[in-house]
Image (spheres, rainbow, N blue to C red):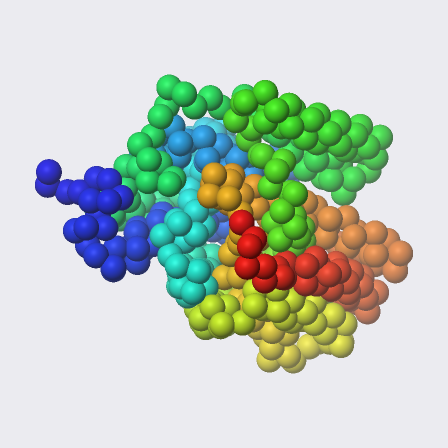
Length: 487
């Protein structure tokens, strides 16, 4: 055999360094997936002009990706059990490559949207895999460092992506954005065939014949997610009646989904999301933190560029100037925080991170009109330091003490909830901002910033800070009392 294929063969060939090579292999693919989720936003204005799109249709370039990505995360455990790590990882990378090339070559908006959905499915499948590998391949005292190194690479992609993407759009047009993932995908495929094993989680051979996908659960999850996100979008506008209908259907889907998952488990089936996970207190609390963290992260990523341009009247070019240093600081903070999390309890690390994030939002209220640039950069950096403390610790803290049979599902579920929180966070920030602008009599179409508009932004940031502060209560309950006979 030219190249080892199974986990045992690879460990024998590469020795102790193998786990780091495996982490590198999955990190490159995940960087491509995460970059594809954010970088396309830079191309939306040019793409809208090219296809003569309105704002609502253009919005689906991002929303279609996010919905597909969120739902696909729940299929990762089934794919890993049925096809193993390598085939699942290679499949998702090929889908991402096909979506990127297809989107770049498309001459019709429907094809662009289809390409974005394919990219979203690929990104959703691949994102839970690194957390599963870190839990299974690394010792408990190494997981924080591994999560920190992985997080640094993954965070650099969205931090640098928009800046590079802006130059590509200016030089080569919007199509170049789609092709940007291609070199990452090709490198990822080469690494996958060298370092990603053919085994399923646990080191066993994949068994596609005795593994059944829960299609009913997947359908309920898809319908519920679409209704939730569209309901929040309708709330953002004036169609409140249809919004409440959609949100009602979303709630019904949640109740039906939970009942169906319990029924599947009781009758020997394989549920998409095992409800036994939520009987484990650290996982239940970690899931709540992940949802709120997603809401704050994606919501603030949406809100900050608007605040810089509409609230402060600064040019779009300064958005990158302000956000880029914060992204670089986040990339540096994550590995340092990862090392600390191997020595400091995870509930303490996450709590500190959440409080720093909340403080960065609350401090926006101290900035008046015509802010000094370094103050904006400082508060943005403070929030990214907080995120750096949370990222390496959250998955490890939530999944500590779980049975090995539940680890794959736990990683998928917590990523699903984080993305769902992120998707909801963007809409919620828009709804709150619109509400506070109406309360202050501010107009979002006015050319010049005003005190009233700035007050609306400040109050939205304060509400985000309060939501983050509430998450500390859940984060503190991630603490597990030491029990010698536990498990």
